[in-house]
Length: 421
Image (cartoon, rainbow, N blue to C red):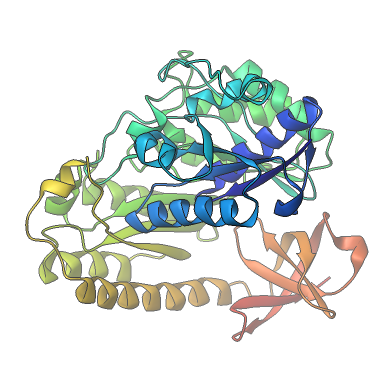
């Protein structure tokens, strides 16, 4: 029996798909990259925006058209939030939730019988391996925050995690695959510990002290959960990379309150300034949402000016989209699509300027680069410890190795640094 996987959305979804593939292999299935050969098709969906919903529906229908004989199993966040809609799509055989992913073996054995999982207490373990220099390790799932624009808590359930001991065991398994870097991932990883009474700081200290992976990297962490102790530990660590990805979403306290975020503009700025007071080299990535209901030009300018006046490395810009079932859906003063796009362009241009300025600081310096893949016939590419994209002259022996690189110039066409060993 052959099984085909299709994944949409975030890195966490891709991480969990990797784990589902392993379960399928353990059950005797052959994972195929050819949809036409598949007896079963698994679609891991996304619901982060209205467009994501549409893409998920399209993917299911398209795959059914390509292989109408295959049984289609649908999971992921869209399957959680709009299960009845998903069930109504032609070709869908089984729909199961994120929390039921841990029952995937049973689902494969008997598609018609899905065991019900407790949304709040069950945790589906997942990490990605296979042809990668980096592995994404899920350490936390769910969210208790219920931001007014977000459906993820309804799809993923409450914040929960497995124990530090179990995570260390997973890292030992990852180590067998010659992975050089692990990215800690989750829905709200700074909230780690609800299930076990532990803390995220305790987790990263345990990973530093009890594993052999050369590099760890922390994915997105909320500014109110990024403590000064975590910052200090990361910046002093030899194996946790000096890289922080911190959501802002808006530079206006009024909009932050409407979003039901758990921090103020000042608290966000304080964390950025603290990082910069300790390290000018650390990478800082930021998330921003434009066009939230009620975001006037004045409120948007607050966001723009805040970002203009701090030193960050890159910016992820998202245009707000209405999500039925969220509190923001009911808000008035919607921002026109044209204004959203104009604001996105302004922030993306600012991001390009900041990213280049940050990179240029390191020309004529040496950084450790994890070489990941071939760029073209002349170059291979990788990431520095502080998340700079670098290409160096091609040499196959450097792939999946951490090498000392002299950064020599900026490649404007590909927006990355050029270095040499």
